Length: 141
Image (cartoon, rainbow, N blue to C red):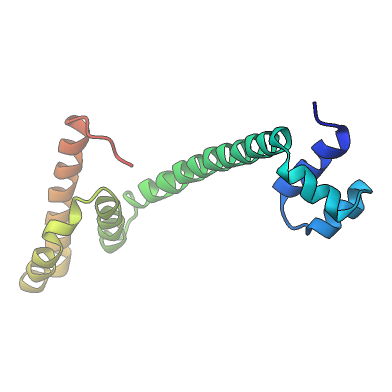
């Protein structure tokens, strides 16, 4: 079983920003002791476990932030400006790899028609595509 000092060393290692010398000073041990601990199987196992936990917590936080980002992007779909809505739709579709297929074609159509009419039509086409993807049960990542 690891000592409180060893657990403190692991905490500092996982926290980051500390050198071996600093960790040794904080734990009131020599640098060599820290190096010896790092070779110890039980210490390595506990350190790996702590690192895995930090990674897991970070991934969960990123997922939460991603949800907020997607919510904000979703709000842009209701913007007054058609160009903002179109940009939001393109961003969403690019993220789910749908919009790439018609990107060049859409630009040509906007040039031929008035930009507002073309944007409105493209938005409707894209909304239909989104609906089909969601209805089809494909996961959006």
